[in-house]
Image 1 (spheres, helix red, strand yellow):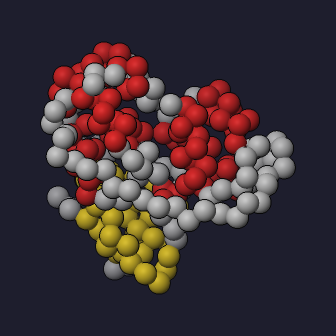
Image 2: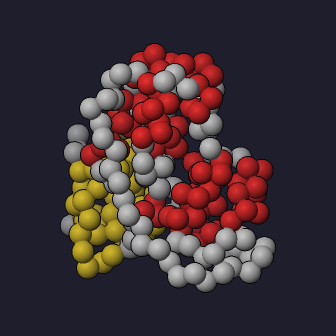
Image 3: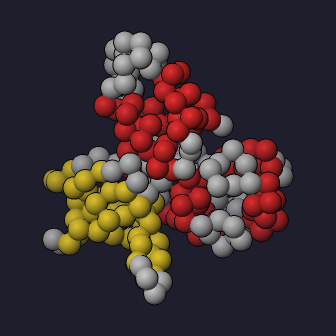
Length: 202
């Protein structure tokens, strides 16, 4: 079982990144690919969790060890698979998630794709009080210029963010609502668009 991979990020997709490790390209599914950047000059450490079954092998990647720890806790909850766990982890700051679990906020948890009331209650039952030692990492984003995006025009960064929301499991109808709001905002990076879109959805 791998703990992490250390290599060059050579490709970014709404669902995954490709990490070149000593000439081998690893396809790694991540919650928010746009937190990463293609960089052929500097290696990047990506924490990973490998899933091996009789029919497939998949690698899930994480920006930090904290993200990996929460993911592994989540997939041990009945009703939560890797895709749902990634969708839950897409927000960079996990304080709201941990607070929702500890305060038994079912409504908050059911806003994540693939999480119904029954699963939300199971998350609370299994994880309440068991994540208190986890302190969410804070990530600072470099703000882009205050360049306005013309109304109804979807730039490349916004399109990538919308594709990422669809990949996470949000319905196209909900993603369309996000688009109508974000096209009116000043231009952002893909990661900032994704973060803003998640705030709208939540």
